[in-house]
Length: 295
Image (cartoon, rainbow, N blue to C red; front, side, top):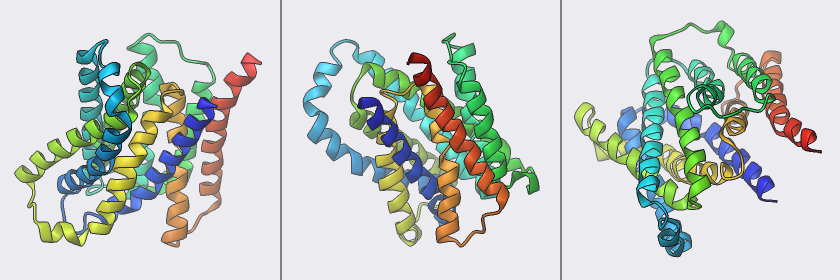
């Protein structure tokens, strides 16, 4: 039962991320990427912190008795990874298109098992590798990348994908030791908001009137994606290891495509549909093969 709830949480957070891509892109018409992220993640922090106080206040002290230093060390690593991943992705959208950004972001899917296997020397179930291949190929077809032109911004997206992968890995580490998803979510959103605000004040014009013009995109990306979705991710990774989690999260591209089809009247061609199926098969393969092996 806990594994099923974690799978549902992973799917729900991935759905929210996929539908947030549109808000991220259109939310920079009047403000810069750092300003957008600063306000977005502060809104996310405000959405999560009351829940953390209500549901986890009594658990925090007991959970941190063992090793408080380790908790804050991992929490800072998660926050910094999320800040760098989201900042690079948001800035990259100024220099590349959504299709390129969506495709290169999916590179975190192969990066996660590679980092775990080669740097942490942890075993990876063999089903992960063909699943990764299916997801990357699916992303290639889904984003129509074969018709795209590689741009300078794509380098930023790939670098951001590395930090998305470290975020997934460190999240898996911290939630296994400390069952405080809401507290962890609140801390990481505050870290992202703080660093984004500093860069916003240095490099951009932080103008309240312009921020209010993007209020709907910020509220959606902040409350649902920056707040709720990242907490769902943390909870999901309590019972799903990082490599399979990354494969599930690749469904973000599928949900983004469906959202664009419904909301923006984007046309789906046969390659897009095949790409969605590739990713879906990759996710199912990574989740079902280990189960069949046990039975």
